Image: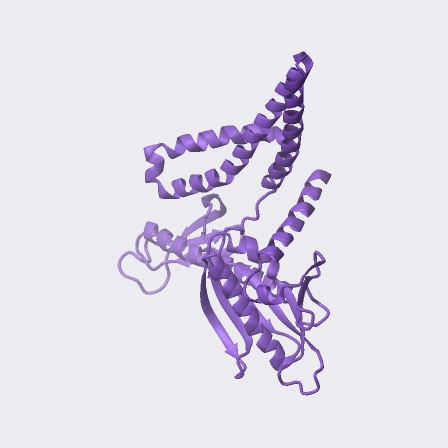
Length: 357
């Protein structure tokens, strides 16, 4: 794992050199790409330099212990050696975590959908509470919350609500919130004092990117033919009409509006680009719909990721078996302890998988 770190050091040096090039500064797309790469590489290289320094300290301490006869100096060297060894171990773990492949969606904004599941009005009331929880959490991180749509139930609850959260790293932290959230409490409308269980489903989706369509001209076949129909002096006498076939998709576009073959080719390319864009949009839409279905599930009580138990004042995340007796704080947006624990568990699982490979 550590053998590629020197390559990353060299790459960071190259990136910094490029960023100082006036031509790169003038090319905003390239400049942004390099700045992003620098931000990703810099923490890894910084930790690696600390790691090398700690390793060097170990070597120096061992040399002192080998050569030094003064007992006081030897004691100092032993202390230094123990500290450096502990630091090396810490840094190795930190570097391993930094080397985990990053989720390409982590820096994106998110669209959050909350839907009342089983439990009727009580579920809708809790859906509204979860909305306020995420809004408060967003505010605490100085992210921006923007409503998209809401379907209220008339008593302060939300049957469904969708909103966007805009901010650095929003998806990286909120993606673990997708799933079924279960609430156990005595509803205000319950006269017998019985505890009811209701469910609310949450879907966290990264904001969709614009679809760029790039056409490889090697994938295109142009055939020319004589235009048909009523035309003027040239329309029916020259091979100005164009039939464009996009080989990978089988899309065929014919264009004979213009007298010029070149203009018809240009129009055919525009039509093809529009059709391919529509195809990509449809795929993106289908994938998003599939992601939403797979995240939300059925809203059944048994399909849960987290339980909010009001009588006991506790929140339990069932994925990592974490229980916190701070229900009020969490519902007021104090989610960091839960999310940090989920991130740590995710990183541990990914590290284990990397070591297996």
